[in-house]
Structures are given as structure tokens and as C-alpha cells.
Image 1 (cartoon, rainbow, N blue to C red):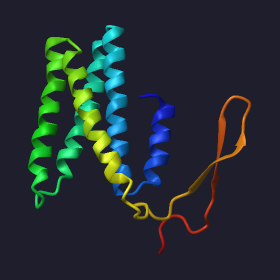
Image 2: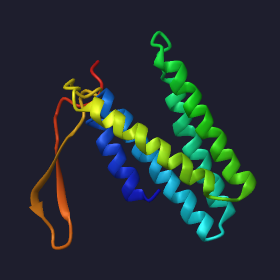
Image 3: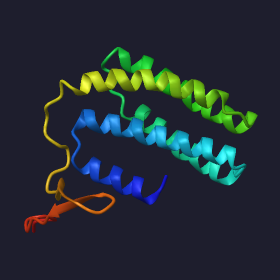
Length: 157
């Protein structure tokens, strides 16, 4: 993942509510899938292992945050476990077939979470963060973002 992508995800996470955070984790997972495919194409096994570890960490975080008082949690846990095993097969078989299968299946799940997120009108999880405004000014080749500083950010003693 590039530094720009990391900064973009970081900024989005600070403004996200619960549903949006789940969607962002999926987007991060797909970015790591892209990194795996790029490293495979470039025949760079170390970068590929690193990307697989990062993708696995995202899937593990999905498993760790499941609430098992709901029946669907057990099914989602098994699904995420399947995709973690698929990632291991990518490394063992040195093939992208399993990665492509996982991407297709997870894209369907992602679209389901997108529909559910449309109904979530809750406030962002993180409080006391910078507000980012995009679109007020444009650079020659990009969109400029500005952050409004708030004097009350940080810890209160």
C-alpha cells in the first residue's frame, strides 16, 4: 500500500462511523489483494508475503470483532477463516487463483455491507478529530484538502 493510500485511509477512519469503518476495512483488504497480485507479477516473494500478512491481519480483525450473540456471527467467522486459508494457499501454491476467488466472494459481501451502511446515520466513532474539507480549492493537477484546526483537540487534564 502506498503512503498516499495509508494517509487516505487514516483520514477516512477518523471520520467513520461503525458501518463506514467496516467498509474501509474491506477497501484496505482489497488494496492488500492488489499488492499481492502486483508482487506476484513482479516476482517479489518478500513483498508478497508482507502483503499476505497484512491482508490476513485485516481478516483476523474481522473475526475478532464479531459479536457472537447474533447467529450470523458464526457464519461470518467461518467465511473469514476460509479466506484466511485461501491466503495461505496463495503462498503455498504460488498461484493467484485462490486470491481471485476470495476477491469475488468478498466483493459480494462488501456490497451487502454497503447496503446496510446506507441505513446507518450514527455519528463518527472518533471524537475530537480534525475536520477535513475537500473541494473548496483545486490545485493544478489535484484536489486540495484543508483541515480546520480546533483548539480543543487532545487530552483534557
